[in-house]
Image (cartoon, rainbow over all chains, first blue to last red; front, side):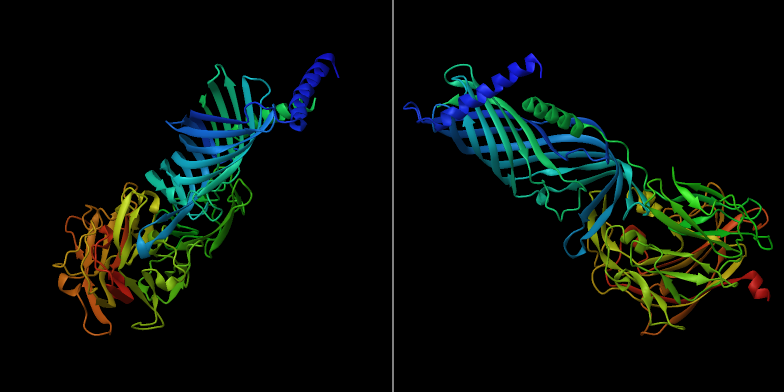
Length: 254
Length: 371
């Protein structure tokens, strides 16, 4: 172990101890409750992880105009540690255009008694537009290493209120029923999986606030969904997709 | 140390997961093209899913032929196509895709004489991923041939019924002779398919040829490939039928009810000259193409309801276009036979419930009449 590493490790340990020591200390008589409102811009994707081999190339990705409006309450247990919860209105979305190969898909087509399944293996261009609105409840462990910094780590639960998941398949072909099926050219076809988007989501959340004034902070938040976007019986997309979004925004301490 | 390792791990993961992975090997195991040596073939091979039929000339030696086979990229075939095969009997080729998992087993049948009689006694599942059946016929040498295709193949693209009898074309024991006849039904369609086509009505259509859905979404009329090689002069088409138009409203291609219209059936045969530019007729030109030599058409008065439940015989003459001179040495000719429970079924028009029964179709040729 070289000197540099030792130094870094000592610093890290000190930081952890500083916080941890506070946990066992008496709560400070100062401000126990802290309220914060923030707004931010969401960047990310509702994406499979890792990218499956069927996705050959991402031609374009656009985050769209999607954001978060949130209100958080922190109960400080002592000078260093606290618990945070609150509510957020969160719109997670993106538009992605990809080239796919041998992608198994199954679409419900037709109306009423005459609905059937159009299934097969698609090769071509795929454009997907996602815009899902959630009501988010975070549960976070909070730490204030200094007056300027607030760090929060934990998880969230989310309820989907309004889903849009639609797109098109174009410039390619589908092998009907699977790789041995007849080839059918697809110039442009549309799909809409909005009704299939799962009603709930939950995952990990990490949030940092840097107060550059007493009231205002720059905030960054990573939310990483752990529940696939579509239920297991859904066959429109052969792989699991997760909501992975980073929010950048401004927070205001009330 | 640990924290650093964790950070490195997270960074690696983040980079790793966002990378495009190696391209998967192809799962395709297709014979894309098949040909026997030029002097042997009468017309190009017909590939209908895993059945390949090749019309060959009479009196040629088929016992040791080396075919020309084009496979999907990276696929392998067994036996090797360079090994001569005896095409007097069906020859089976197994193709394995580049992914080494997917296989297709093709049966090649050389056909030495056209089929003159269609009894609809033998029905098979030709499309392995579906349950619908298609009639197969046996020629004079008792070789199995696959002359028929049907709108079942198109319907199965988006609708998978549990039983073959639920598809618009199926066998029925209500036959004129033998065990089975062909039954065709017009049904209400699924409506919009993926925002591409609107299908208000699907008719049961059975025809000699092959349905290739390649461009069906762009123009469904292009999917029906009409025609099988035929090297004699057809004079008449005879057969037996029963037709009952549906009792509800006639639905036009836009899905509108047209109470003033009555549904009618289609029964006709078209004999045409084929060449490299016209392998087959399709829905856009089946009755109008300049290469059409003769048409045998059920007249309008015969396309409505037939009396009772019994079969009604018909005898339709081929009416020849005077502009064509038949030359079987120089040209290749093809014949298609078309039946549909709704005459305008290829335009997704008709009355749901219309039902056509067909049995004992015979093509009477000049040579046969001489005998």
